[in-house]
Image (cartoon, rainbow, N blue to C red; front, side, top):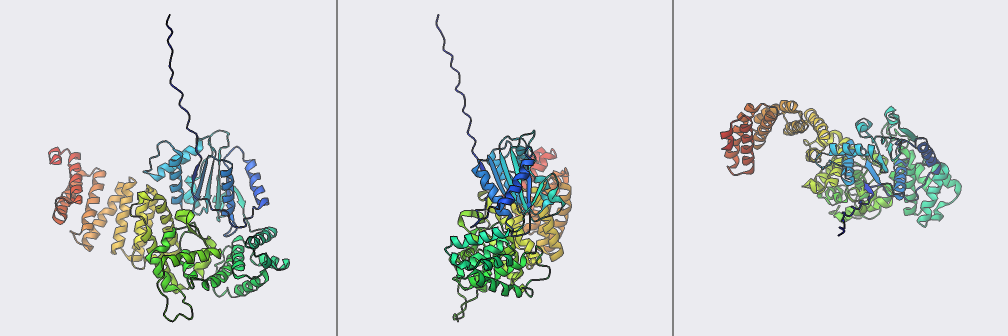
Length: 587
């Protein structure tokens, strides 16, 4: 009897899991102190919460090393092979959403299509709650705890411990400790840690002889409040200027004694501002004397108005920045011809100079966030900027952001997210200054960018704030005010709130007809938008009345074959079809 050999399909091999890394973890600071006793306390909290997601909120004032400590945990998680590691620059809620959406795509969460960032971010949170993969999410510099509330990762189901959250914040209110979060207070260095940091920095730079007497070093670290940021400024100054602890302390005491006249009342809200400001001013005085001479001060004042988490290096090659640096450069005393043109290379050299004095970090390997500075350093730089110089600094920063914004955002979504964060920071610091000549174009660009990124709820909030600000600062009859309200109406439409959109669009059409005329392109577009909302609300006959007029206007003003004319006819045909006027739709 013939035997038949059965052939079974070969088993499909499982695809090996590839670790997912999203976001840029800050590199370790020079002479980073492990802070063993503090980390032991954090680890003990972890042990007591071994069956749930542990959310450790590292709370403390500016410049105490929270982010560096969180980064050390992130690097350890990476070394231990955690499956998913997400680092979020969480100062703004939209950045949290954007980063989660990127993570969802990289992890391969089902249903994620990259079209709606908020839906993708929510899907990522759902995935974290059920996955058996190990994960760590770090929310660094969490500021808007109210807005971030819905975006805290939830504990995984069951009793397994597959992931945890680590957050850093300066907030110390009840919201920090809510929802079962464990709060770890981060203070300044201990005296041994501060002395160890200073000794290591000097030794690594080959400047150990600058240490001098131990008592002088002790006096110095205590004068600096044992604050890691101020110690970093001081160490860089001592190394670059080749002076001892004792000499630096003399300079520091002299500078501190003159600060009361410079710092505005209530400026030192963290009780650290004086040390940081004094060390900053000493460093800037020295950097101003170094090549490229006279650029350190204007450079850091501009950088101080941008997002501390970082901005692109290309911003310093823009015409806006090089023109600003030229007009604010302090020329050498022997230069009678005045300041000459500033090249992008000189602007970047100024950044590297500030980097060497530990006033900011400029590293091209960090990509879109190549230039970073500590928030407390930035605050000190802003507070010591003469009021007369602030408006032009704000304008230069805004112009530079607009200059580097990618024309097609889908080709550089990460860069667009960074530029949005920088625009938000600039707007916060600038206040009404960014509205001096009307609404600065970068504000419109940032709003459109939110919608392009699928951040529809964030865009709605943004346009509401922008339109209200325009009405208050520019008046309801200003062209930019009308545009801002039109963009708000568009956001209402995108989020399905059609009736609210219609109320605004009707007013926008009336305003534009009065301000620009019936035949102006913006007026015709506003009527087309109103018609689209009427159709969406089921008010099709009213939509048709407007769309017929829009088609006529487009044909008369742009021609029969123009793309906008074709679009207008297509919209009219759709409305005819919706009203069962099929023959007219076909025509």
